[in-house]
Length: 101
Image 1 (tube, one colour):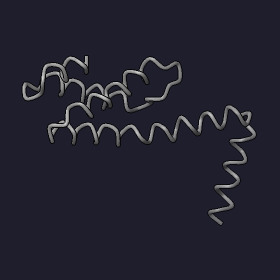
Image 2: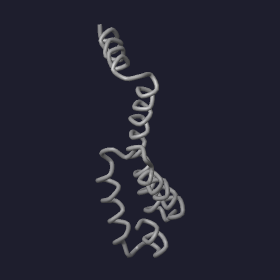
Image 3: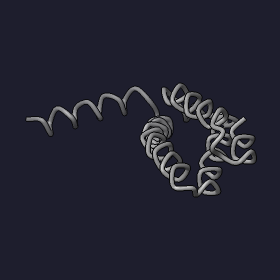
Image 4: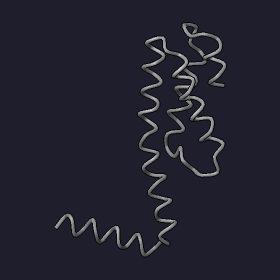
């Protein structure tokens, strides 16, 4: 019964949107699911002293912010909070703190 329900919902959503639009929306939703993981990896890298890898995460977020697609979704608050933590941390190199701005 649950499989039928999910199939019916997907079918309904598909009928509301063209297949391209629906696929695009699904891709955005799936991509948004990776953002907390990227934040966690960046946090772990900073705590282990691997600041260069954490900087890559900030570069990813910088690109996403400039993207015309709304890929960040509800993660903006977490990204801003983490960025403020990094900017204010005197334990990190100035280059790392500057990259976050």
